[in-house]
Amino acid sequence: MKVIIVEDEIAASENLTYLLKEIDTSIEVVTVLDSVKSAINYFSKSIDADLVLMDIHLADGISFEIFDQVAIDIPVIFTTAFDQYAVRAFKVNSIDYLLKPIDEEELSEALTKFKNQKKPVEVSNNQIEGILTLLKIQSEQFKTTYLVRTHDELKPILTENIAILYIDTGIIKAITFDNKMYTIDSKLEDVEAELNPKYFYRVNRQIILQKKAVENIKFYFNGKLVINTKPIFKERIVVSKAKATAFKNWMNS
Image 1 (tube, helix red, strand yellow):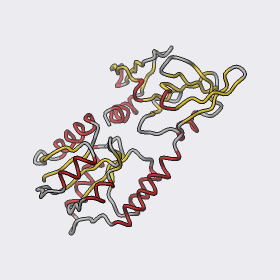
Image 2 (cartoon, rainbow, N blue to C red; image 1 turned 180 degrees about the vertical axis):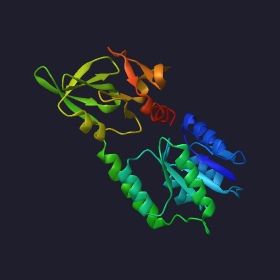
Image 3 (cartoon, rainbow, N blue to C red; image 1 turned 180 degrees about the horizontal axis):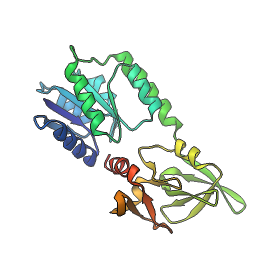
């Protein structure tokens, strides 16, 4: 089987290539495309491939823009970091998907489904328009700013500037990349739901980290992990054995 990967994150494309080889050594990754522009140029020519694995968000736009410019006449499996609600909508639209971070078993099942199809899945304009609408709604649901109290005023804090969120005696505190601390009037469960899972991950019951805040990851006893962050957190951040694989996959996506 010949596969084309459309993915703008090097670590994610390398991980996907590795998983494909783990599942079937005969799979050949023909090429990796990292942008809408490069994909349009590539698919404008005659191609020899059986399947496309395509990330939805690319550095220069949304991958559905590719279909506006060129016709892709081979099956496409989309990858997405969206939550289960959004993923169910993709399934309703009859387009296959993989939820990031990509799991080897789910990838294997998707490949099996592809091999058993009697005819290729075609992406219609109506499906693309419906999913573009879904993408817009979903992206608008994620928090971009928290309004926090500082002394006698309210100050907006961009979520992209938040490195660590944690519970301290029942109060949610946010540490920014410039090592300033703010209090957020909410519950950690609600904050977790409000943040984009592509960039934020709840590593344990007390802490949510932004991906850019992870300095390094060290192996701990019994399959656990210890995360060192920048800025430095006051306590040891431990990821349980049960969550270790999912966390590493998220970091590698």
